[in-house]
Amino acid sequence: MKGILGLLKPRARPGPAGPADARQEAESDPHSTLFATAFAGQGVDSAMLVPWEARAVEIGARRLPARQGGRQLQALWAQDRYMTLLGPQAIERMERFFDFAALPAHRDVVRQDEYGNFMVVLLSGAIAVDREQPWGEQLRLAEARPGDILGEMSLLDGGSRFSACTTLTGCQVAVLGAEALDAMMAEDPQLAGSLVALLARKLSLRLRLVSARLSEGPK
Image (cartoon, rainbow, N blue to C red; front, side, top):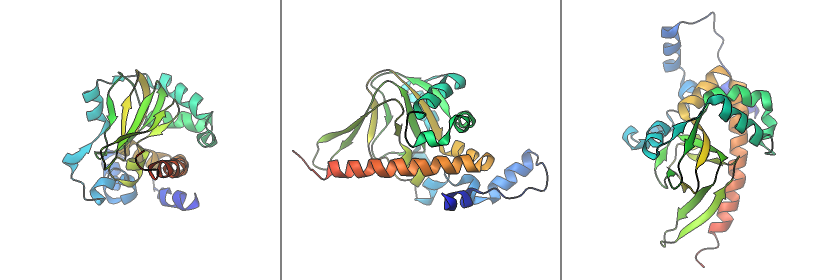
């Protein structure tokens, strides 16, 4: 955690900056675009990237009020043994960086092997997490429940999507994109550091479970 917070520590500012100063600082500070530029660092062309804005239009997402989505997010994460460490005030500060949306059933929120720079927190409904195996079998890895986080691996490391995530029912979700995470880093670095550390911990645990499942091979 200390290492992450050190990375996110903001530089001292001599005084209030105007819009032009803010743009110049963002362009000169690599930390301010750490996640938004992650895919370029992996050699991924911008035309290959699927941001949330494009996916939302494609699947017919409908925007939800931030206050409504924020309350749902806070209630769900209060029951999560890791995310509850953020505390209600931190989650309330965080909600302005999220987009909240309602999704129809049977829509691909994430597709396997694509490049996307957003993660999704399921607020209500159910989402299937599937992976197509090299031998052609489609393996159901999980059915996400409210409070579960999907897609954070690509957001953090700039790699392709490991699995496909498809809504089984109508769903409500909270979405955090790379640019919003960079904005959180710039404006509230301690909050961003805590979030990234908890995401990494949850991701590590989930990957251990998935690896054990995949090692079983075809039945």
